[in-house]
Image (tube, rainbow, N blue to C red; front, side, top):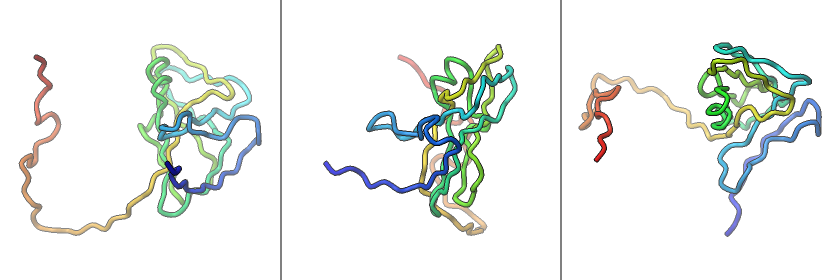
Length: 155
């Protein structure tokens, strides 16, 4: 089977070779791990957030964006999550990529140099235009939201 076509993303690295560039961990991985580009341990106090540098500057192609997600193991085991839920890097941003980590655990956590702190995924972006209307088409669901489909039942 032929390999999927990849999109080239230009990257500038603060310290070439100090920490690895993000890579896909497996053939089925959708995102790549980002590393903390720090020279010494950095603490994240419980309930607080800290900006952690990655040492990467990206040139995301027009029509794409990069999204920063929490690493599930880090979030589950240590309570360190991306503070905004998902970070978005637009194609016209040229600054260093930082990860805003929030500590949701009851204790202070430490990020060490080179720790894998988040995941990055590059995605196509579909631009839209708004079309103001007086009425929307009807659906079976209608305006129901926030639990309107009920709770899961068990047998």
